[in-house]
Length: 355
Image (cartoon, rainbow, N blue to C red):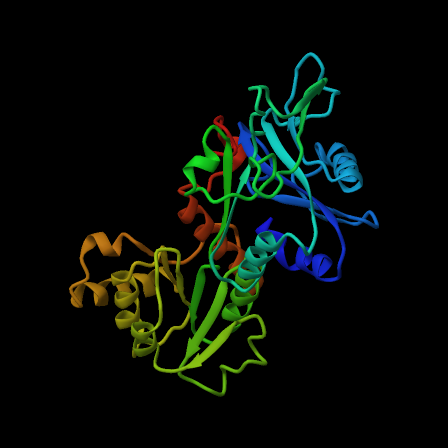
């Protein structure tokens, strides 16, 4: 649910109760990933999406039910060739969803949502298998209709055994023994470092911000680099790029895109980026510029293994021409590199779409 923390908190802070449906297991092909949530408010508003439309009608009804009685629910949706018209995932996967009612009184959930909204690490571990009762029976009543199986259980009480949907401390082994748990985590957004205050950078900053990156753009020319020109950037830095790059935080998720054409610092900057732990280093330029850049990098003793990390000319072959199209080309390559994908057309593959 962390991906909709801002919108969910707006409702909770207004004193509303909401029902939250969260995917806790995905097997096979499915449109969304574990941790994705859909919220239904008391006035019937829907926030977020889980399946892209396949099962959300059934989940909407489940959320209304949980809003009314407060009893958490675990639903499983699949697909049957014999009964393809039943509620399920037409893409062939199986998804399990926990539906529970939340309010501002759910202190730990609200606290973690606030951490996620602020861009800080957040984590919630919840029970997705009901605790056993004293006589050894499962605490949930089971209902199965077509391809959708539902498990209902009561919420845990203070001092009692954890129940379906309860937030628990996974380190408390005694309390969690025998339970099925799912942990949802939110980590700070990755950084996109853009060098060069050009129109391609304006478009790349906007597209990168839309994808959830924390964008910083750097250029030594204050007349070109202004907050007004780069409204999507979290930070604009007027500085000598190699000096700035050496002082800024770079980790294994950071993307570095060099879009300038300044021979005064180009090779030095790219060499420093390649020596960092950045996940992606790309540099704009023609094939001639690339060949000249590589010669200069070798002169700076950049080894072949590091040179193989350089994405230059930057981007995928999408036929991009405008700054906006080029931004899509660059970020498509970033996504492919980050996920280890090939970047080929899906229709030309025969394996699973979602790895």
